[in-house]
Length: 215
Image 1 (cartoon, rainbow, N blue to C red):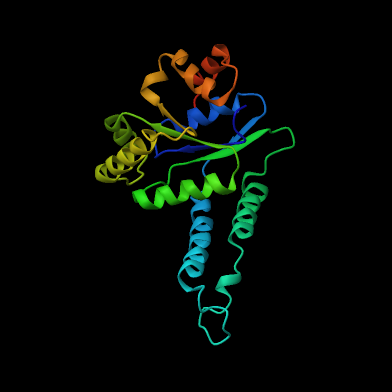
Image 2: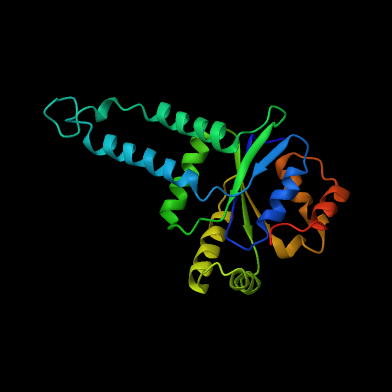
């Protein structure tokens, strides 16, 4: 496999649980489901410490400074510890898992917030990949209403646009997966498997497609 961590970045009712199932059918891969945005809080904590150090380090050597000690914050160690704790306590991959990760739908963020979060993940989850998952917006909205998720059309459109812009980046760790492309033609997932460095087993993929996921 080309990556050690896989992160499905998406919004609700987009077929992401199905994608999660396909990834978990790859030997040695374990991709967990949603965690209610648990990683967001860790990213915000690290960002707060970074802001404190970036802005207030010059005077923080003095015990009279209200930011005393900011210059001594070890941001790299703190970030690594946060990421390691997340893997150990939230993802909890079993010994046989060579690749792990999770999917999350709570990315109703600004472009700046999403960019910072992805950069944190790149920095502290080595060899990671982001799978941007989208779906036809009209069908997604209909599914949201049926599930009573309370997502507005405006919020969904904004999230979709942001994720598509991220997918259009030139980053070599980002891959765009569109539910409507492969739902009736699993062979169109072959480029995804090539990107991951995984063997494409169409029978296995079809078995996942034929199994109901989520609600």
